[in-house]
Image (tube, rainbow, N blue to C red; front, side, top):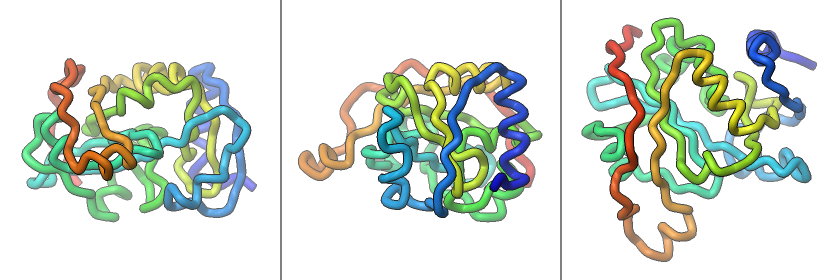
Length: 194
């Protein structure tokens, strides 16, 4: 059964000519709960984080592969921000219209101030298809990664590609990514008012 939060997502994807396959499932608020969803689709799971700077004036949607380990220092440095931390539930609701456990790129449809910066793990960009939530965590969509980039473009968002270590590699090496920051494709946006 479809939820009213999903309907604008499907309307936007249809209007943009973006194909998707919908999978309904029990609530999946963690990557562990998502593990079995989408088996056999050839799609990679996408971990989405909604972050803010120390002052709470800049907001970032960070998209990572499911096996990636989020390290604040590394990602903050690549994005040119002093220190990123998770937003509050209120900020998430006010800016993306989402609840914790359902953070997704389609929440950008609700970013009326157009103040969110997007960052995507470079390895995720190499995946043919990814799984995303359609603004709720009881369904997932299989979508071509190239279509997600088109979705961002059609909404007027640019993104910053970032390098993030696999969780296993981070544990084995005990170090942060040593790659030089990638070329940044970002634009200056005014601070969000929440």
